[in-house]
Image (cartoon, rainbow, N blue to C red):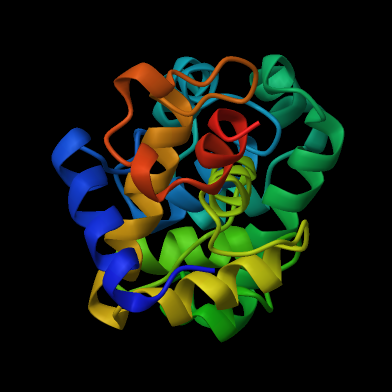
Length: 213
């Protein structure tokens, strides 16, 4: 496991390697971000960004989504995969926002997680990106890198999140989240990690294991 000094150095290097790391989903409002994050489950941000311009041009508010026929929404989001479940979650969340929060997306993780279809990862992303909070959302990239680097040895997102929260200062949580995601997308990829391009190999348990065999 990494100590806080090592964690700080790893984050500094990752932020230098990925200076533009930020949420890559396109959105205009917190509600649109919530919709985009739900759509991004097991789907690329690129694909979501191809779908949402038309969707948000026709429907953009919680009230409009709450009144949608699921079949209509399904046609917009079909290419994102799992479209029936995603449509149901989005419409249910929109109804919750209208009925319980006066049409405004709640701004805390705890309240966000009370929305239908919103889990901890989605809540963390919306809280951090839309409202400027500090949170570490654990997607497949973050989970993979946290284990490869050696922050944690677990396939449970909540355990990975807790380990990373302990490793980094709280005011760096969101930065760490974005840096890890970008490193996972563009350098430490799932199938063919580009170790020769990586700035943190000296701190990486996976790299050390490969080279010490």
